[in-house]
Amino acid sequence: MKAIVQDTYGSADVLELRDIDEPVVGADDLLVRVHAAGVDPGVWHLMTGLPYLVRILGYGLRAPKARVRGMDVAGRVEAVGRNVTRFQPGDEVFGTCEGSFAEYACAREDRLGPKPANLTFEQAAAVPISAGTALQGLRDKGQVQPGQKVLIIGAAGGVGSFAVQLAKAFGAEVTGVCGPDKLNLVRSIGADDAIDYTREGFTDGGRCWDLILDTAGRRPLSQLRRALTPKGTLVMVGGEGGGRWLGGFERQLMAPLSSLLMGVRLIGLIAMERQEHLQFLRELIEAGKVTPIIDRTYPLSEAPEAIRYLERGHARGKVVITV
Image 1 (spheres, rainbow, N blue to C red):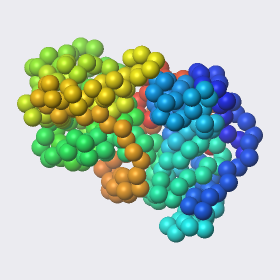
Image 2 (image 1 turned 90 degrees about the horizontal axis):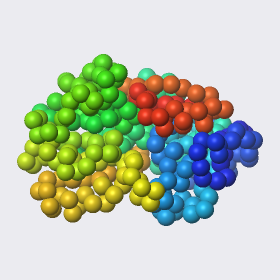
Image 3 (image 1 turned 135 degrees about the horizontal axis):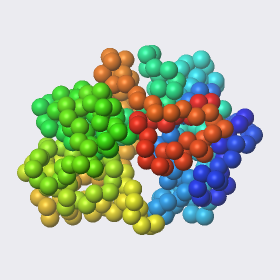
């Protein structure tokens, strides 16, 4: 089968389209014929091995343990292991796995769900990691409530575009922060207000929100704290920028101490992919309350260029690989 493979850490130049063996299906696994795979910042971190914290966490100190990139997946079940009970060959599924930038991938049964009936494979592949992260940030960590004022920083990105829609589905009043060329998109997906961060300093204390979901990962906690109500909550998703060892994740590591010092809830989110998230999201999608926003699609052979495009930081919604 064809797959995007890397032998060393580095830029997108280390990725190669190769012919490799199909993965072997374990007792608890499914073999999925991949139709589409989402591209998210996690793919970039695993490709580059940066920050070094990624390597320390078990992904390979000198070279990546998993040679095939990609995590988000949507496709059809080709074969199932002997312990699999929820799926059978021919089922259309979406979820996460290791190595989805390939014609076939193995996935655990508990990491997949039935594909939403009203989505294409490309749309479905955009959902699992980004929408799951937004869901955990808003509902599980942020404990969003109807009527609350919610600020989404990075509202036009992969996680942010889902977060805007989910916050509205939970009954919140939503403000999205984005660049000037993305204001119309953020409003079109349900934001009550959109802020152009190049023109408006939203952390000056002039306006305050009950919950802030920061998907951009660059602003100091002291600034963001000024934009919170006295009992507000800040949830930080991911970490960008910073040094080679921790990247931007030092904000998350400092969150518990900062919460004590600043007197507000500051929470760092490390998202986990779970089957119940897929089920919850599928119900919202099929009800028309959430729709994936796809910026561009690339064929499998152009996966390196897809990652380069994502790295430039201008994507509106998700970037997807078609297989």
